[in-house]
Length: 350
Image 1 (cartoon, rainbow, N blue to C red):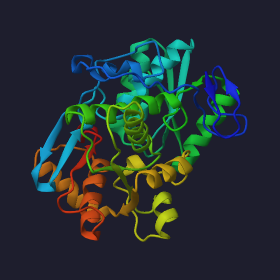
Image 2 (cartoon, rainbow, N blue to C red):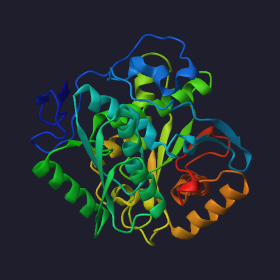
Image 3 (cartoon, rainbow, N blue to C red):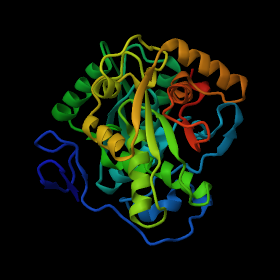
Image 4 (cartoon, rainbow, N blue to C red):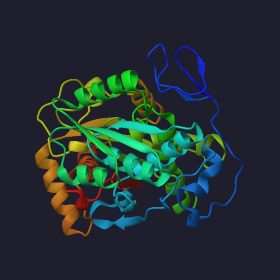
């Protein structure tokens, strides 16, 4: 059962409330303490997941490794089956799609979410159509097409891609497997938090620094750490510190006013109108968090440093480490703070 937090309306299955607000699962599982088995991947946290089916490629339990040059722990989300953290949401979303009997899923994406949804749709035996920007990287389009999905290119902004996709869903049908709208996607990305806590012997870091576009990982981390605390598995939540691409930074602007510069390197988070903007701001306030933006030069410097130290990521992944550096320079993060940073996408995609 789904419900609308804004107006309280309940639905069996729908991608958006009639009032226009995103929907959520009516019940959020809070299981009693048990010992997860990492051999099950992220499905070791099935009791936390509001889905019963399982469309899986063995995803989850990405490495959490020391990164001495950054004085942080890096969680290597780029080692997922399709090379990005979006597989967390895709496995849960396609599991939900199979549960409700969807015959075709539709998604809009700048690349990584599309590749993940297409791949897990192939695994589920469900037809798939992905709407992408006309200027999307060819390597990401190939991943979508090789999974057997139809690719629809849309000229214009990232927002124009979403508009075209939504219009197609409403006029031609299909189950909208949106990583921005679908609550199952966020149930999947919440497993990031469960794994981090388990890999740290059920301790929570002082802060987690994350790239921030639509907020799929940021809000997943918030929901996951909140669920652990509410279930009594941990006793606190980390500060959640977002990093946006300059020029595509509505959350930073909401908190700090206008910003300068432009960052077209971080193509994975070029979102000017995040669907869950208010929820992102609530998560920041609830965790004493923040959001800043970094420019292309800072992103490129950090990407070179990541590669030189063995972390072969795509450019969007460099935003969070660059933001970590900026947060420390501003005194937002203490020098001795315990910090975790996800590296979200593989350099093989570029």
